[in-house]
Amino acid sequence: MKKILEAITLFGLLLPLPVLAADEPEAGQRFDATAFESTLHYQTGKVLLPNGKAELNLGSNFRYLSPQDTDRVLEEAWGNPKGEPTQGMIVPANVSPVMADGWGVIVEYEDSGHVSDTDAKEINYDDLLADMQKSTKEDNKEREKAGYESVGLVGWASKPYYDAAANRMYWAKELRFSKNDSNTLNYNIRVLGREGVLVLNAVAGMSQFAAIKPELEQVVQLAEFTPGHRYAEFNEKTDRMAEYGLAAMVAGGVAAKAGWLAPLLLGMKKGLVVILLGFAWLGKKIMSMLGRDKA
Image (cartoon, rainbow, N blue to C red; front, side, top):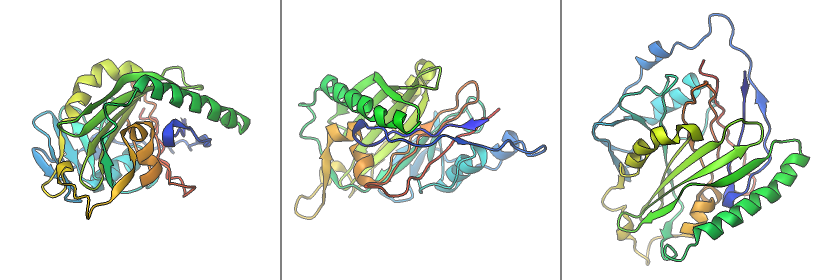
């Protein structure tokens, strides 16, 4: 069994990172998904996130796990080292995140300042994609020199769309890792607030996109900021502006300025689980989350 370490970095670039091997579990140490599932504490309905700045309206199709239970899923069930704090996890109501077909979306908050959306109508996403693809190709030269696999940005799996009325941006990228037989889907949701951005990320195999797309589109609508933290309540005299706009956010600006990008890889059918990691601005220590073989 091997754990594959892959990273999406700022402004579409990809930094060289090592591939690490995991030890095989000893006899009698195999993970008991059913027993673990019974210890999780799901919340339903309307859930206020721990930071008090946003809430989730889950309806009947989704459930929520606290940051504590999310850490347990990431570390105990999926074999990840301890990472940065989250605001919890959204999971489907009909699937456990620790089962082979389970999946979820990690929720985080980036305290990056108020992101201006004045460039929303001016962004040419075809040109932005071309620039991102060029950057990844140039960076791959250094990756390969260092002995790491190359990563290609194939294209938009779903072109970026900004909902100006709700101040939400969502898009999906298709990635190609040179050592993988199938392509990877990176689905991104950003909800803009008065002082920062609510970040929801999920990653899966491209073959899963058709099946999970309807549910991911529902996730876009689940989160909203609470009174006092909403986008329209921005006060230019007292509040801090972010150092990037929507175009940079799509290309990776949130990760660049706020510290890390943490999309969750949804469970693949053959049991390979990869967690894409975030990185800290200007060379801080990378906090990786490595997946494990659920089988």
